[in-house]
Length: 385
Figure 1: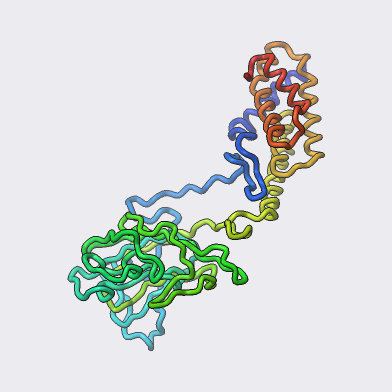
Figure 2 (figure 1 turned 90 degrees about the vertical axis):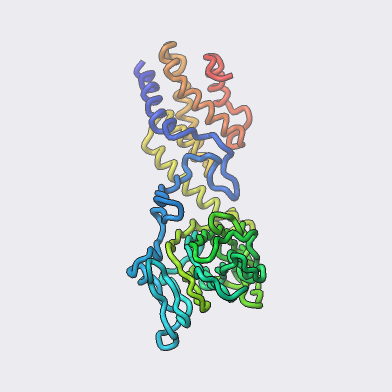
């Protein structure tokens, strides 16, 4: 009976250490390009981020580059040396604005893949036409431009309109408000990745103008410039500054913030998946973590964790250790009273789930002996159907 009590204690450990964390042996297992199972409880949870207090406000993990204050202007520097520029950018009424001849303004901090929010306004009194009205731009990494232009009732060439990836792709629609009103840009930028002359990823832009999608995962394809198309294998650095263009028009800017995006997995080729080698390295690391958890357990909870590690890295010795613990558990089953067996329902069902998973996905042989024994117990008690 002492052993039976140990079984009950094992169930308590099982419920605390496994069941409360979510079911293991649930989704499709890892493969050559996916280190985690589907719905894997071992996959890291995302960090918590508080959104902005109002639409367009910076979330808690944003890097605020301009908030309307003179102090935040210190996060920028002029591209032109002082002796080469005619004037400066200035902060006026909470907005950042170039004076004619100031040249571009660059962020001191550099960014790679990122989410960028900024707001801009062309002069209320519209003058000029086409590219000569409210012209500016924001350059990612200082290399590829999302066009800023007052296109409200002011047509221009399509791939140079507001929201265009300049010289690459026109915006899907013209979603501008009248001149003088604040316009919002929300930009998702994924830099091109070129290695040894091979384009692993052409890079992409997603752009919303005033909340309207105007670029939807648009390939950068090297980018463009005035009357120029850049080569597809144009090399981009891992990070670069943001650039606000001085095109001679008094375009104002406010509420500029950036969120770096999580890195892409681009070591496996042009499909963006993890290589088999890196996948296996990650799987081994996950297996080691699960085995560390198993070292602090005993009995059935330990056996379940040992089996869980096999999903990431198969090891005959680990399987043998798990089989020993399961055999010991099942060996005590006939000695338990009916009430003690009933107390083990959840443990048997979880064990059945684990063994069936390993059998279904080829980690153990079909008609696995221990799996059949556990299934027989579960069916006799009407715990599974």
